[in-house]
Each structure stands twice: as C-alpha cells, then as structure tokens.
Image (tube, rainbow, N blue to C red):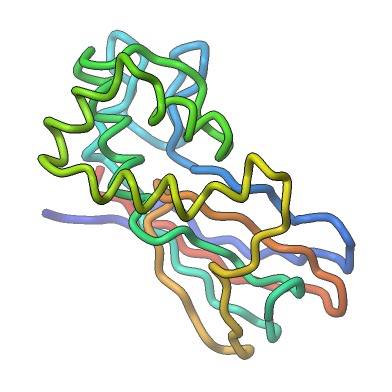
Length: 183
C-alpha cells in the first residue's frame, strides 16, 4: 500500500544522567480510549492497528551505550501489534501498556494467555520477550539492546516495539526524525 511522510523534525537532547525517555511503546492506546497520535480515530476511540508508523532516526551526533543511543527490544513490535489488534477487536480488555512494566503485565495476564497463544500459535516469541525484559522488575539499567552509531548513521524502526532513549552522559544527542505511515 501507499505510505506517506507524517512529519519530519529534529531535536537535541542535552547531557544528562537521566534517560531521554524510559522503556515504552509509542503506539499504545491511551487509558481514555484516545488513540496514539496521527491515526484515524474510530467510533470506539481506537485506531486500526494496521495503521502503524515507521520511524527513521538520522543521528547528527555519535551515540553509544549511555550516550544517547536508542535501545530496542527485538521482536517486541510483533507483540505490540498483537496487543493493539486484540484490544481493537475486543478480544482482550484494555489496560494501560505504554511503559514496559505495564506492557509485561498485560502479556502476563492469565485471561490474555489463550489470545496470545492463538495469535502466535507458539509460545516461544512471548517467552523470549518475557525473558529479555525480566530486568525491568529488578530496576536494573539494561544495556544489552543497544549499539554504537556515528553521526550520519540511521536506524529504521517500528515504533510499536518497546524502546527507550538512553542517558546522554558524555555528549548531546542530535537527531533528525522522519515518521512514515500507511494511513
């Protein structure tokens, strides 16, 4: 299908010992049935989960672990999509899931187990995700989902996956950001 450029912006994150943004998913439905930004609002307030967004980050400065890199949990976009589809279709009840702790709670919820099992046909994806994200309940600073990039490098990601912006301990982080959508 056709896609379009939703927006382009740029921003600078100053040097800080705090995360730019904690572990989260950008495409979580809000607790007041308001949809994520930019989507087509439907009568019940939820956006069609197929109207997803891809983001392009073009780094204008070097980034590394604890120095402005974005961390991304592999395969989490698949689970985020399954959550949105389940809520959208009324197959699982809504509960907040923007941050990683809430996201895991929704996946762990006993009443959602059969939905995820039927959706994925196999438990291994969920098991890998839960294993990869155990660190969040221990309140540890997990750095195994990061990388080093140089100014001029780019990353393309599905913003429905779980990600964060790390601390910028040594340098400012400057990014040129593009967001594409199919709707």
